[in-house]
Amino acid sequence: MAELRQRTLDVLGKNQKWLLDEWNRDLSGSGVGNDNRIGKDELGQQTAEFLDLMIRGATQGGGTGIGTAAWGDVRAFLEALSRSRALQGFDSLQTANFIFSIKRPLFALLQRELGDEPALLAEQLWAISEILDSLGMHTVNSFQKSREDVIRRQQEELLELSTPVIKLWDGVLALPMIGTLDSQRTQVVMESLLQRIVETGAEIAIIDITGVPTVDTLVAQHLLKTVTAIRLMGADCIISGVRPQIAQTIVHLGLDLQGIVTKANLADALAMALRRNGLSVVKG
Amino acid sequence: MDRIPILRMGEFLLVTIQVDMHDQLALALQDDLSERISKTAARGVLIDISALDMVDSFIGRMIGTISAQSRIMDAHTVVVGMQPEVAITLVELGLTLPGVSTALDVERGMKLLRQRVASE
Image 1 (tube, helix red, strand yellow):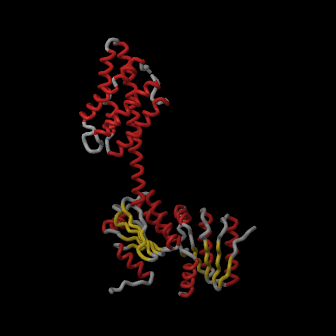
Image 2 (tube, one colour):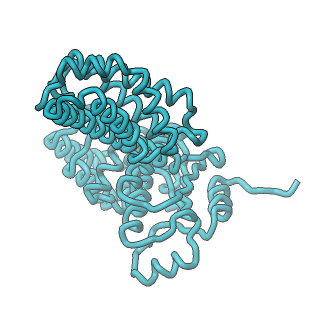
Image 3 (cartoon, rainbow over the protein chains, first blue to last red):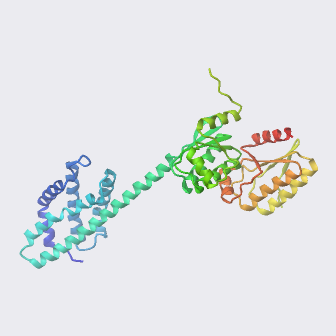
C-alpha cells in the first residue's frame, strides 16, 4: 500500500478550511442537504468532523490500512453516519457519495500543491484514493447492515403485531389472524394462544381467518395442528371468518376439516361460544 | 422402584403425575391403573399432567393406551392440565390422541367426568 508522505499531510492540515468549504459546496450542489431530511448545519458539522478525523487518522496511521486502530474513530464515525442515513431513508448511493464527493477538492488541492513533483503526486493520489475507497466501502457496508437491522426488527414487530390474543368474553378468547400463515407464524400464534388459555382458563378459543388471503393445504395443516393442540389442553376451538372462496378452495383441495367447528363470521362464533357457556343475549 | 400414586375419590380414580415420567414408570402406572379400575369398579379416571413439562412419543402413546384400556373396562378417562409446550410437542409428533377427553384443570375435569357418567 502506498504511504502518505509528511508533505501531503502538511498540505492537508494547512488547507483543511479550504477543503471543507469546497467539499460543502460540492455536496450542496449534488443535492444532499437540500431537502428537509438533513439540515445544512448538520451536514456541515458532519463534513468538518469527518475531515478532522480523517486527517488525524492519516497522521497516526500513515499508510496502514483503515482496519487498524488509528482509523478506529473514523470507522466509528462512518458507522454512526450510515446508521442515521439509513434511518432517514437515504439510499446507499447518496450515503456513499458523502465520502466520494471529497475526492474532487482533495485531488485539486494535491495537484496544486504537489504539481512540481509529478511522480510524488501520482503516488499520493493513489494512496488517498485507496484510503477514500475503502472508507466508502466501509460506509456502504455499515449502511447495508443498519438497513438489514431495520428490516429484521420490523419483521419481528410485524410478527408480534399480527398475533394479538383478545379476550372477547369471560372464558372466550379470540385470535384474529391477518396475513399469510407460514410455519413460523403458526408457531408463534399457537404458543401465544395456548399460553393465554393457560393464564385465563378460557374454555373456548376462536380463530378468525378473515384476514388470511388464501388457504392451501399447508395453511390448513397448520390450522389443524393449532386446533388439535388446543383440544389436547382441554379447550374448544372454533374457526370463523371462512369466506366463500376459501370454503370453495378447501372443498376443491379435498381437505378434511372434520372435527373442527367452522363459522362464517366472528359474530356467529361468539354467539355459539356464549350458548355453550350457557349465556344468552337479551334485548334490554 | 417408585410408583405413581392412584387416589380414589368416590367412584373416580385420581392420578397426579408430579415426577418426570420415564418409560418404566409409565408401564407400571398402566398396570396399576387397570388393576385398580377392576378392583374398585371405578367409573372414571382423571389424569393430571399439569406438572409434566416434557413428553416423548412413548409417554404420549401411553396416555392414549391408558384411555383406551379404561374405556374397555367401562371407565371414562379425562386428561387435565396439559401444558402448552406438551400440547405442541404431541401435535408435532403427530400424536393427536383421538378419543381422549381433555379439560383445562382438575375442577373442570371432574365436572366433565360427572357429566359423562350421568349421561350413561
